[in-house]
Image (cartoon, rainbow, N blue to C red; front, side, top):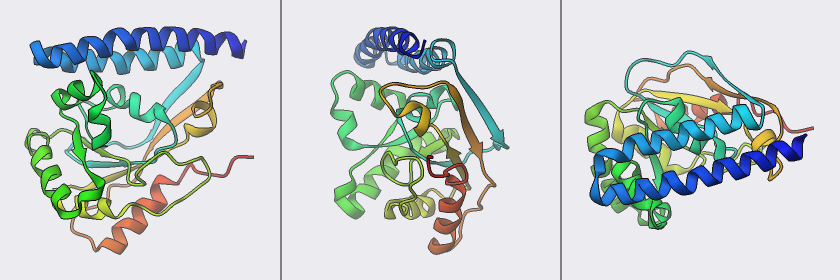
Length: 229
């Protein structure tokens, strides 16, 4: 059954992705107002394929605030990146600059309002990022970041990237750390049945010293991160 579920998932999700991402990339040039519903539809389609075809249960625990915040999320697989627009209302994700060079996807990501960051440009990158983030901040959209910088195998706890503290200071927003446990079920090519949890941790107020906010975020995003057996 697991093989049939995976075959159905890959055929349905990637077939739908080809259509939706292509339409979103095209719309970015001719009908920018269509980009958001198309990108949202892609994320909703992914969620449907995960729950109906793979048999995953997706749940949320903790309390998510109803005010603008910077969401710092544990990144174990592509699941949380793709499911972002299904989980949040019009999120502005911070993504590495290289992703915006992907044909079609890059144009759609910019039109959707994702925030590019060039990691190797230091202070220049932060100034460019703040400029790109300004419309999302003014609109009160949730800002989403993976503070570890890349996907991390379940059970590992690398330190946060130095850029996280800089964004925390620049944005002046409260931080909501979000723990994830998608790695054991979704990271593999052969995806398994089970429960993926988004756990929203305690809100962390703006203005804290760097060492304190990093320590609190690091502990909170790893709340579901027990090593795999």
